[in-house]
Image 1 (tube, one colour):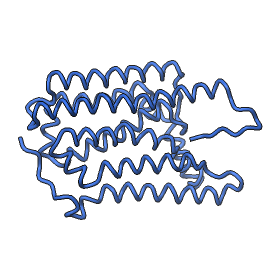
Image 2: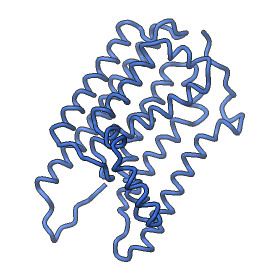
Image 3: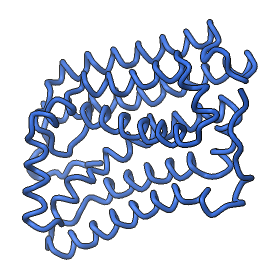
Image 4: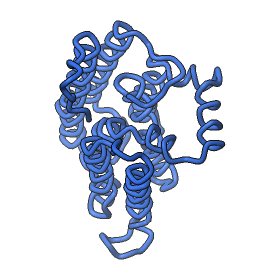
Length: 269
């Protein structure tokens, strides 16, 4: 099975649509920050949060450039780079930017109340639990790489787009359930979040080693060496993102147990 045809880098306006959408989201965030600072005198939105969110946006832009996209369509290593940027690294910085909190601050009262009501629904409470978020996040990876879905994606461009969206949303949801400061219906205990994060680390390591040893995805057009190199990218760079997530989780736990004195202002992300 051959990868689906794709325009050369920069040859089509459609190649840049994903980046334009992502940049549009960044502009909305910046506008909301300016609006919040104007409305809330003496209570400016954290610069650290803004920088973090824009860094996450930058990682998405890199992953979605026509060059990387073309590489990802033809080479499993390129695909893995996209997966790592979109599903593992970008969500960390986007979550630290607390976009939902910012949106609630600047949205009309009726809109803010509607969003808050949605957060309180049983369905959303279930989806925001770390264990469910883990199933959506890791389950998508296992299904993609250990079933024929990956090979189907090579010949169906819309599946490629769907998987990118899934990686981003599932990665964001999982990260949010572990370290997010945005409002959630119910925040799981530190012990629960720590345990589920360690399960995620182990599951990710197992998947990458399994792919390396048994050359998954099987029946793909990729050479064995290419599959193994992609699996190593998943293993080592995935470890780095999960180490960062672990540091952030334990840092937030430590700060909750040892709050800053009243005269000091903590440096918040």
